[in-house]
Amino acid sequence: MDSSQKHLQFKEKLAAIGQEHILAFYDGLNDESKADLLDQISRLDLERTPDWVDNYVKNAHSMEIPPEIDPATSYPCAPCEGSQSEYAKAREIGEKLLSEGKVGAFVVAGGQGTRLGFDGPKGDFPVSPIKGKTLFRIFGETILAASIKYGAPLPWYVMTSPLNNAATVESFEKNAYFGLKKEDVFIFQQGTLPNFDFDGNILLSAKDTIAKSPDGHGGSLKALFDSGAIADMQNRGVEYISYFQVDNPLINIFSPLFIGFHAVSGSEMSSRALIKSHPKEKIGNFCIVEGKMTVIEYSDLPDEYAEKCNADGSLIFELGSIAIHLISRSFVEDLNRDGFALPIHRAVKKIPYIDATGAIVDPDEPNGVKLETFVFDALPLAERSVILQTLRQEEFAPVKNAEGDDSPAVTRDMMIERAASWLEKAGVTVPRLGGIVDCVIEMAPSFALCVEDIEAKLDEIPELKAGGEYYLK
Image (cartoon, rainbow, N blue to C red; front, side, top):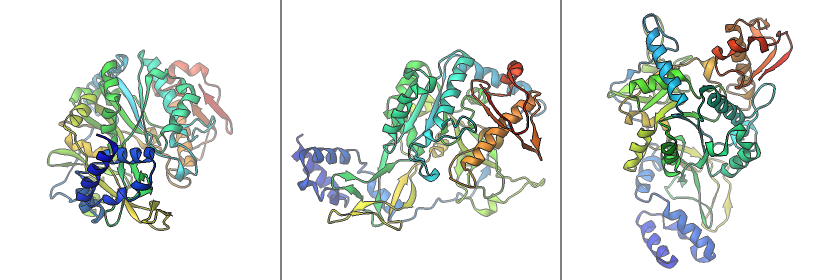
């Protein structure tokens, strides 16, 4: 089919759903721009677009809270009396799967460092307390250390977005893939969804360009398949995917215990959870709805549920989602077999666009809607799903804001505190003042991935003195 035929075909299809304005400037474009615009249109989901407009653009679709919501159950961080053997068995199985190279790391890294005042991919943001290692470097060194520890190459899958793909690839190349072999790193882009004005019209960012945004971390499950990452996992024998987001340097990427519980239970998608600090903490709530694991956003869970307590005062809905999952490769394959689609979420934003005259408009106020999907919406699609609790100070220190909560300063303090607590558990004296660590400690992943790794290296640790700086590698 030649370009003129494609143009007429798309013109008819767009007119049928009220989006023919996308071609308003077509006749004035050169041949290359015409071909590019037609290619963009070919990748739009024209069948679903009218539904998106009706339910998410023109109307603020709100989640319907089911009549019955039950709290999810979980495995505690550590075994209770009588469950020690169960935990030991799960850990053993997890270590075996790692030693067989059956687990891969998967980081969702499509974001920019804009909110941190940083110009570049968020993964390139420097965060460690002494060496200023970037998030990408911390993850890369962790994966390398785990590969050495378990005696098997553990591949790293990195999902970027159109916003930062080129810069991310450049960063990995410039930094020699952070110590990993190039063939053990698979970088790919997530998909996009069109941006709309409040009347439901798809916006243009240029005369030959549809305004689009990344389709959210939920798009990762489709992008894994479409990019060939799943096929790469098949070739390598990777059966389990350790999913995490790029802003959390405390992530335990390869937890043998978590991997073991996931495998033993036959779970398709498992999660780590925190005990919430208060009823309305801004993290999702793990719930059971119609027998299925479900995450309900903090803003959607009614107060009557959020504030409901047990007799001892603890929250009934206490388990908070922190976007750490273990996903079976076969589950992603099954989801993509029939072209699945996760629920759409709506975000009102300021979106630059061109108006009917072709002039660029940079709005001062929100003027449109971006659509995205969330990975936790795949949980109800899983036949089995388990939750393993974790401790905030051990595994959750996201870098989101330039100052205040979830800022680099808070994250660095938490990195120092975790290193100090690991050393203390191994019998090392750490100087403290009023309970606060009174020195700066940075622990490289090559030194220890967990407390147990420190015991064999006690003779490498200098005496820690107040006010000192100590980099353990």
